[in-house]
Length: 374
Ligand SMILES: [Zn+2]
Image (cartoon, rainbow, N blue to C red):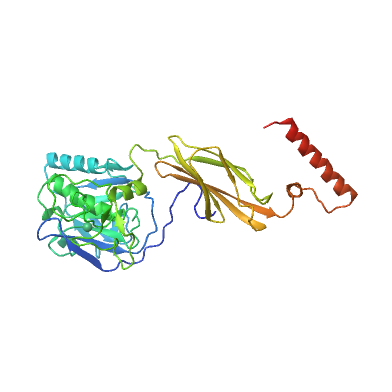
């Protein structure tokens, strides 16, 4: 396939070698820090892990790739037991409610029931940083990819021994850790859970674009090469998780013309049928990977460049919906210098017989055109 696998959207995953040194930041409370552990680029812009598992019962975690099902993590250097969060049921219920509310605008399921082997991010509430050999003042830690990609199946930690049993505060710390696993950096917008700036009230993921940083602005991302110059946490989460309301179904898309391996003449037309259960936002034509035209309404008929060189070319269409689901279809075509009737199997250079069949075919084509007025 071409740039994208058909219907699979923007997913490809690179292997994750060992983690590099942690980055230590100031924490949300005086004297605490929240760490992010740098992991190599993941290249994942669209999360498969769209379930967040809230675990207050403790866990045994082991070193390894980030895998919530196997309970392994790049953050863990040796097998460790994280104790349960000793909190009243009422406060746990309030924490779960806050987490559901915080993440309710995105196409993600927040649950305190273990999803097993289904892709998910595990939010582990409990224990102390000493359990993982971390400094005593760490309040939480999450892996963070150097390209700000999604880290599928990550485990993120909030050390409740270091925090007051305040559901809103714990929920905001955990949401920041989850944000890191989904590729968000710290930002200088106090109302956002990705921020360390003081704030009175309930933080929510903001649609406003903000500078990244803890106290002063810096490029976004954990490594020397910036992932982005600015960040809007809500916009990034929407593109990575989808918006709530759950149009999880990608558009349907069929290229009706040309067919695969068809010989076509210059300036040929590309025609397609596209639809979506909620609503299409665009159908985009690419030729040889270059964007040619975007249409937001049908009919989806595109005229290609008449100066396209002869030879093989790849025609790709992308259909998008409002939830940023993408379906891709492509066909290979052979652009010929010759008039179109040679392209459909009639030899112009033949003897009497060949010319005769050409002539006959042309007449048939002309009759068809007359018979079907447009
Ligand atoms: Zn953080």
